Amino acid sequence: MDLGVTILVWMAAAAGTIVLGLAFRWVDRLVTARVQWRVGPPWYQPGADILKLMGKETLMPTTARGTGFLLAPLVAVAASTVAAAILWRAVLSPQSTFLGDLIVVIYLLTIPAIMTIAGASASGSPHASFGAAREIKLLLSYELPMVIAMMTAVARTGWSLRLGGILEAQAQAPVVLSVSGAIAMVVAILCMQAKLGLVPFDMAEAECEIMSGVYVEYSGPSLAMFLVSNAMLLALLPLLIIVVFWGGLNTGAWWGWLTFAGKYVLLVALATLIRNTNPRLRIDQAVRFFWFYLTPLAILAAALAIVGEARGISWL
Amino acid sequence: MALTKLKNWALRKSLWVYHVNAGACNNCDIEVLDLLTPRYDIERFGMLLVGSPRHADVLAVTGTCTRQAMPRVQEVYMQTPRPCVVMAIGSCALAQGIFAESYHMGPKVDEAIRAVDPEAIIMYVPGCPPKPEAMISAAVKAMEFLKQL
Image (tube, rainbow over all chains, first blue to last red; front, side, top):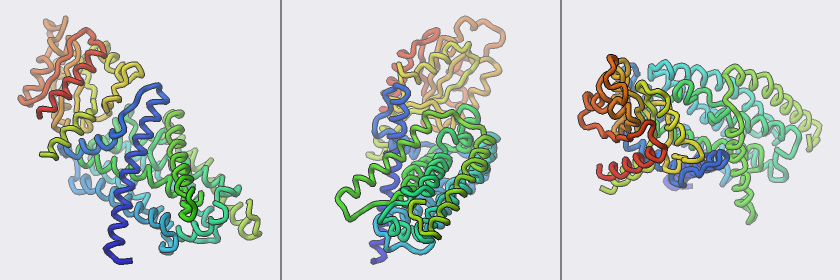
């Protein structure tokens, strides 16, 4: 493909992900309102929030280290943008992906969390440092089961580290239709909840407890960048789960786009429902949940997948 | 010009509220929380209650503004990014109510805020406590006023 066309396609993927993420954010807020018997915000609300923040003043606390404080949100958006480009490319043309892009995507999707920690630490606020400490512990606890769950899918699809290879191996039956795949997908969905910072894992930005924690000192455009990055993650993490566990997009058949949209909406609605029916956990409860419950479950799934792959048992 | 219009529209459609208690008796505070309940649901207008003054566009100030509270109210106002609206809620915030003669009173809320920023936009919501409907009416008037900015 021509270089200019490639760049255009990647930019379209990034812009589309922002729009999709904001739309999902609205769905999330609307469903939350309906669950609480309220009317809820109009459809343009997340877009209006971002536009408003872009037009406001950027305040810098006197205790902040300016460069790190203002650079962190930009790096977070940049990382989500590159991850969006790689993931959409894998969905739309599975043949053209490169070896090891699954590892690159996992790595890129970690950067927004690391940048929230960096920005919060650079702001010099005690509330933000509490939030940053919690975010670090949460990151350490959910990354381990997440990566093991991804490895289960890799084992089930003939040890392919290419997203395209994983999709091609799922042409017959998706990973989720095996015992190990189903367990791994449940683990991955719960890790997605923590990665998105939604209740019950929102202790890093607990509004009424540590005043929005990691974002407490951010105002105007820098806060808008973090919100854009979060909205993109809301679109990207379900997409990653669909690609790795649920067969991605079938471009060959007319119902391909319909089922793809259905899977997407189902995952986002699930995240919203978990968020609306659970209280916030303490950080030690969250770490215990991920390390002592989800990690053994993910290891079990990986072991089943390896045995199934070695013995040629397709349902394991 | 179109950009200014767009910015202004976005600001009107998404006012985020930070609640400042400057020595209130909790009566107005409960009425402010009423706005979030299903009966009034202020999120219909895009308004949210946020945890940090840095995210806020509206400061909902309740209470008499005691001498202890005055520097804090001024500090919170300085921490709010412009453009922002101050909403003085209740008789105490307007004219210090029945506490006007007390020894521990600072200036009134609007005077305390005008002392640090003479250009401040201040809305007054009378009542002891004001009804949630009165606060929604004040929010709508604030949106109308922001149209002229």
